[in-house]
Length: 180
Image (tube, rainbow, N blue to C red; front, side, top):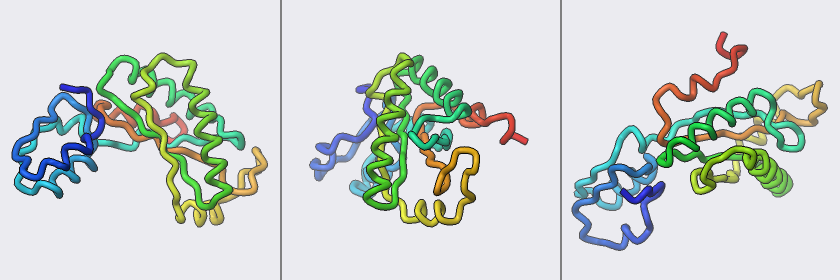
């Protein structure tokens, strides 16, 4: 057990790799699939439960990138769980559609990082990703405007993906209003 969250790139240099034991590590399904593709005959051991990355929650942000009230509750629960289990990780994905929105997304990332500093967790457990998404631009054009917050487009959001969380954890993060 090395507390790995990804397969080290050096592994792919071993052309005759026949056996790899990754049990006790939190490796994503994407990395497992890369290994299977690169080494079709590889005997691979890994923990299925911790290898699955799942969408834990889509959080809404205000115009400055600050999590809304529901998102704050969800983030607190997520980070509290992280603090208790070193084999868990989250990946916060912020979307952009052009150069301007990429700068905005980076600013939102900084705001979320600053918000998270109030909680105790290992920063190695949290990764941020900015992802170009053409569908985001279309969605923003088609989404209803938020009259209460004065957005010119749909409110920004981020997706929180997790590995190592128990099955059903994401359902605990749903607001009571969206559960009905």
